[in-house]
Image (cartoon, rainbow, N blue to C red; front, side, top):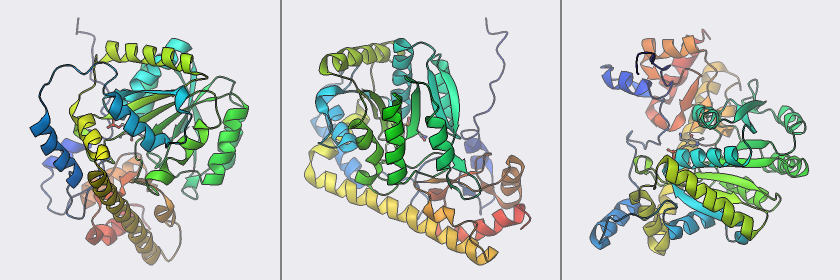
Length: 395
Ligand code: PMP
């Protein structure tokens, strides 16, 4: 049975992890995998999360099944965080999922059920797992131009042009904030124009929001989700708590659908729940219980928000430091986009060969496509990094 199976191509991000671990150079820097790191280089467990875990440990009386749709209170709390109170709640439904990846998986299954083989437009580039998950569910990938590599910002005209030619009923995947891997997000007025085209042309948005709170803050980062929810008849949203709650390995997220009316929303949620039952049966409880405990307690929620704000400002100051460092070394503004990009990622503009050189000659690990996780840097390493990038580029 297994004779015809060959090794799959290595995952470009995950395959770096063991190589980094085995690297014995003491000056090694890991800008590969997408986890937040603080000034000491660790991925912290937020204080409020630790406190919530203690409370859960003491108060929990059973580990019996929760059910395929997860905890409705968790779903409601995350829903308010993503959509705000003002959303058309009578038409929105949610299920708890194993992380954002779990949400994307059940949503892709739902799209495939509703419209087998539907076209899903994804940005080029996008998170690699988007393509894998969507294709695995029988959906047809169409890429749309996204980045203007000369400026490191969104190629808005190309994007608008692509959307204005998409077929009615096509799905368009949008990164709600902190685009992975480019860090380039549309401005508010650009989102507004895109949302108008989406609504006008009857496209169905699938918004993936995995970094809420890492860009401009919890409220601002949800701008496009909230905008679209007030403009379109149908949409899908996948949300992840991995980054903003620092609970990556607890696999916590939610899948939302917005339907044309309450009855359709109920039926769609029921189908989404069937997808969950087939794929993983039920989501794990612990992460969702943490999030619920934090958000239900005003003091814990305030502390979590403050710590999240701290993470965001750390990323921002690293970005500003990086841009300033490149400016100093190059006497130019080619890398100013690093200060404007949002969230943890940017494309530094290296070829795969140059990324390998950076690793071999400078012990700096970045993804082959040139993606860097800015949060992997410590302030003291900024100049070293900038010099190394310029050295491998021969500049
Ligand atoms: N969407 C994007 C754009 C991501 O970058 C990630 C995580 N790398 C996810 C979704 C999935 O996150 P999770 O770990 O919650 O499954």
